[in-house]
Image (tube, rainbow over all chains, first blue to last red; front, side):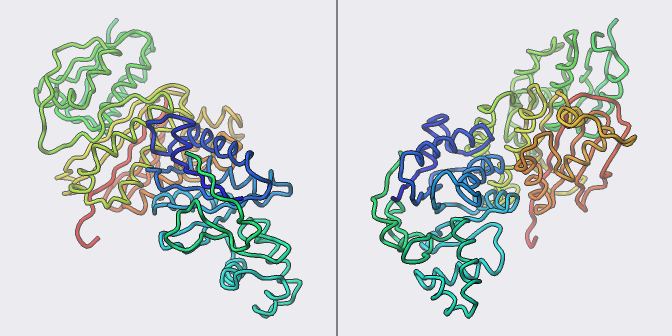
Length: 209
Length: 295
């Protein structure tokens, strides 16, 4: 299931309908809880598009409360709350500044969708993982054996790298193989963003506003 | 007994030490008169620190306002008297606010005591000061966003660490003699627990003879230590330092008996100063210079 979450709307609903800036830790915590409540209502396996288009300022403290603490519950932990993949959409350069800083602090990474629709990996990510992610994006979908052939690495290595990327929720794991978490073609409403593989992307976007 | 505290003619982060020096030996319940009659100019630091001084006194102090009409008018325009009247007995009649030519109040003196205040501060800066920041300071819009992020973070320090309210003010003015260009100055002052007590509240005093206000400032500002166990903490000040470094700005923080500074090449301040007169809380100043063509 795909869910489009307008972060600015969550801010207005959770904290104050006059606010458009994500500043302070209490504000960030309230917004994160609002997002978590929404995620609790959608399926066990979902793609959440967090839309920052209408957010003015995002400071470091708020970025830590929202982005880092949200990712830490769903990514890189032994038993995540559920299988949720995130795409961060509509981020400005200053949003990215704050987010990049908190990602590095917590050794996290995420996928953002740029204005041209291209996905971008940001945060703490080593060269091997970055190359693997780019290759999966290029291939669209791949089983470890196919990935191993395409990259020239042993199958065990391919399995390890892809498993790591999946644990970090940077790629989607399905029976048919691994596919990238990414935005759909440019020009489409982010609420209609699709994962590359059909079985993970069958639901319509859920607008939170 | 009443003690007269003489304010210098120019009231900024350096000259305010004269006021701290005069206050430090006095018991908190002694009546004081802060005599600003000779004062001709005050930075945002001067105005916000004057308010925190009053908050440290058990006996309501008196403030003698500047004789110079322009100065008193400016203080009024910066909303100083609006807040001072609640803390001081005012001696003299505040002038009506008039517009000035060589300085711009980007944010009037504003109290910070809760999260909502920071939203107000950020919104006010965004709606009223973007033009000045871009036209006079030549800050691109993406830089004004980072400037506002820095402002937000230093204000949050008051709420998270001071244990009491504080004050913020932002002003732009031309630093003709020192720098020959415009600067924008943020001052955030409180009279709360200060950096050393904040760290001690979770970890106790460090087992070293060196443990003092200066070391607490070094640990917090230079090494990112905080009283919280959450590893995400400390990013606000780190982000402020990064912004200051990128923009050739200056950051100084006074707390207790010490003052630490991130000093750019254009300034001659010392990185760490100890054994100052004690004053509670933390007094923070950020100075961002105008970007000149070609920089």
